[in-house]
Image 1 (tube, rainbow, N blue to C red):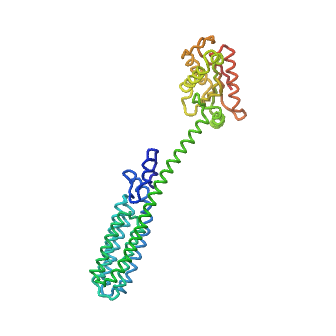
Image 2 (spheres, one colour):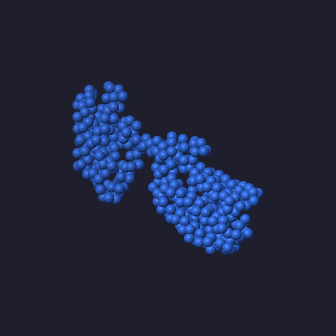
Image 3 (tube, rainbow, N blue to C red):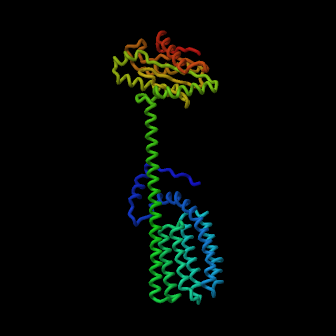
Length: 403
């Protein structure tokens, strides 16, 4: 099966230009034509193969008509049908299966049409049957089939139709030497059939190309909508200031992580982080500076705590943050929390109303092996309690509670 074609927004101007192309211009430019061929040609070839088998069947059935209308040369007509036309059909059907490029299949179809026309015309030229005036009209079916029931592109159909009309008119005037009024009548009939089949061929190809372009534009629009929805989902689950997960995402992700820890019998730890004397910092330095501190702390969390795909850092609200560490023992979580505390202190952000002179944080850690009788909220509440214990014990420190 052909690989599904992917479109990007960079292709949109070219696609819209192709959609607005004038009526006389069917082919696309460069890469777009190649992609159209890759997408549409295999579908056309699959449909055309069945038509070729059907046409070959009827072509051979008409051998009965050779016997009836051309009794003096029917053996020659049969040789041409079964030894020339039928093998040509098989070659063209083979091309429909294996020729990947549509122009190769198109040339095979064009050659088939012209060879079939010549092979059906030749017995008429050498026969002395009185029924020739009725029999030669059947040749028109060849061009009708080629233009309507194959994957022949309009440009080749036009070339083939012109050559066919020249051959047919030569047959009427030179080969059969029909009276002028019969030549005029048969010529008008054949030209009408050919013209109508060409109009149908043009409209079919134009429609295919238009649908191809519109589907490509629809694909781009769907991709754009998907990306927009993804951004909205991200924004809905993300704290706009720090870029960390918000409480909404925490409420969605944390219970799943909890259940997975129980299922896998793996430990889990929760860190509750609170900036020390943050209200005093805001009152002294302003809320803009306070926002800068929150962003700096978020960077520290990303760098020191959440290095694995399932680790989750969350802004709980205000100056409070949560970190969920799946498959992490409390000892490891305490070490991670201490790195957070040390890294924030090492930034040496001035805080004149802190006893340490710089911005610091207190961290509470709760960890252990989750059990079915427990609630996910138990770990959060215990981490919160441990954080308050760190506050009571002097701030800028880590306290832990094993569960």
